[in-house]
Image (tube, rainbow, N blue to C red; front, side, top):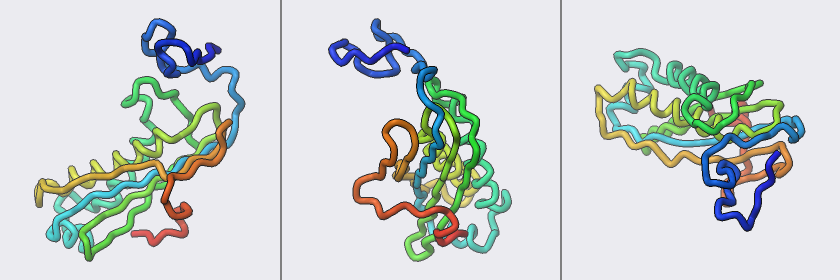
Length: 180
């Protein structure tokens, strides 16, 4: 496994000594249980919020389709992010929360695996895929929806262990969140 040379003009792990892109060699890393939680939101107009809540969107059940889209996005992350390692995910949960007063739909994605590299990108992809699916299903009502921010909230496992985003509340598992 090539070591990162901090004196190199390219100290980034995804660049070789000549600056060319590469997938990091994780051969020597240990397999550990890994978990990542990402969250994001989409600002909906009042008409979209009402249609989602009352399940009146012509394309179908927005949250059911978005949940499947988010899981598929997490599973297919290496197809969209070129230098990601293909991982065998052991779990992926997508949960939603509706804030009807502010017309905000929030999404949380929790991804787990036993592997040599983390699942942060998979969790972020899951949230993004789910929110993009919401946009796609609702754009006939109003194209003015706004996605974001999408952020990593927590990751655990691997050499660096537990990490939580600064200022975030203690992350809760999907069973503890108010689900839709």
